[in-house]
Length: 358
Image (cartoon, rainbow, N blue to C red; front, side):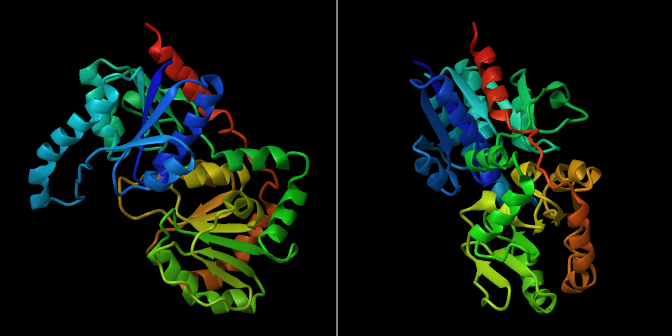
């Protein structure tokens, strides 16, 4: 029986691909022990136990985006985090990392312990933790082609899909048009009315929410249906006309299928799930970070399935002027989804099995 440690905490963008790989690993190796590394503040605290996997917590290494006095604590925090990671990893057979704050100490602890490391990079522009890790291993996989650096020659695996998204793709193969109509009905909307699905990532987006709330009158005048996921920590606007705000959408596969237009951030997981099930999207990339969200959506734009707008230009006036045009683009977009990421988890499992060989 082998022990596999999966490191990828913080946001759903790191946790969901790790869970998909863990589920696939259990299919091939049902008796192995799988352990997730996480921190006390990440979404892994709810997502991992809900999926019935073991979770071990380590201290988070906090790195502010701008220089501050807190940077003085980074070496001490990192040493503490590496020490705790090593306790979990020292007897493991392999570490699979997916980026995020928890991954960097896990990679260093694995290298010190002589444990093989496999890294999957979800974004088109690798993050700092995975760039660090890529110096410690040759076993690299990516969701998108990377033009330079260690990830340039990585295995092009795609991004592992959640089980509900993968199942929805398979179930829709026989008739995409019918699948999209019935998904609307399951969500409580009229099958023949254009539906806009708005989401701002796993926590919601205050910036996107404000614009959407200012555009409700426009949506209602046009007789549109709107499903707005505002985020669990954000205030819930009033339901009015065809506008339906919710704190969170559990039936995400249905939402992707049902929507004629999706408005949201272009995180790696969102782009991958949209690629599998979505019709047309207006992406508003997060304006902070290293610009990866602009790059994540580039291939969808090239396929005429999406449009990108900066957060600065995303306004209620823009929606008033362009919403009809965006819905028209949706009508001529491909009715079917794209299964490019359907076997990503299997490819990462295969790479990990190779890395574990003596």
